[in-house]
Length: 356
Ligand code: NAI
Ligand code: MG
Image 1 (cartoon, protein in one colour):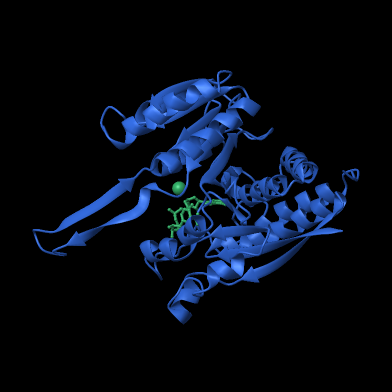
Image 2 (cartoon, rainbow, N blue to C red; image 1 turned 45 degrees about the vertical axis):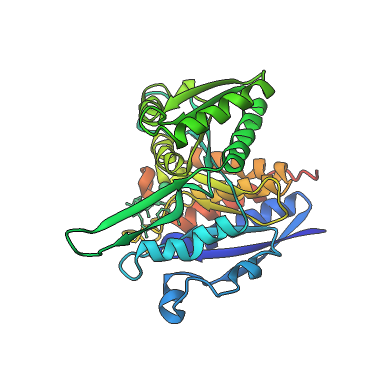
């Protein structure tokens, strides 16, 4: 039986809770479709940092490299370790070392969930550039603490980086509604964002079947609220994509639903799947965390591993359980993290077995 090796990094706060409760769902879905998942857990987190002075071992990337995929909960516990240290010590190095340049995030309402909007007919796929741009980490501070202090943070946009994320987005649009929204702020940022628009324009003739529209970030942020149904595939830089996908999460019912895939479509490296939300220190350890974002991320993982039927079985099981009203408090229910995850595991188990 084909076995996929999955590295599990629960991380901090609710991260380990949502990963551990969801894992049996992925195993069951895989087994029902004739493959197996094997996991190895890594305790890399802010507690690990306090013990060792590092968020992950020096050879952490090499440890992860042989795996087929990485499942990550959440990283960060600001009361123990500054976010700038934890993020740059674990999550960002994985994205950069494996060149996981696509961060794909689906935003739609699962049947039975009503978001804050009156509309529920939207289905957006955000493609966020994941390795450069505003999060390149280029910059510095001088004269720290003095009135003359200067802080510089330089965005880096390369032709290779911009072109490959746009190509991925064009290809996704081609598979969906053939509409692509490209997000910039080229009226105010006259170098990097004009460059992005130029690259978009230069690629468009290669995808004549895709209708591409450029939006400024502020205008599309409003459009996510007022006319989300007019959007389909949305491609944006690292920072703009980060912000837009929180709006996407909000309109799909909250952070408890927002899933993501960090993918290198060209490489033989493990892709990483994680809920969009953070470690939620305010609810950690109480069984209040909504596991649906993580479960959806696991479905994205199986899909990326080539197990689309197993992925679909998870999405169907989520819908079955949502219809019963078994939900965590963030979406109006009274169930715990484990109760929701267990119900979904049972729904997957009870589906007719499909050998693909
Ligand atoms: P957060 O996403 O952890 O929490 C924001 C709010 O949403 C909180 O009220 C929380 O209780 C709620 N929430 C989040 N996920 C939920 C879930 N699954 N179910 C129910 N409610 C949920 O964002 P925050 O508070 O800004 O960050 C906390 C820590 O997480 C920080 O250290 C931050 O840097 C880190 N973080 C890590 C991310 C990652 O690992 N990808 C992403 C975002 C934040
Ligand atoms: Mg974010």
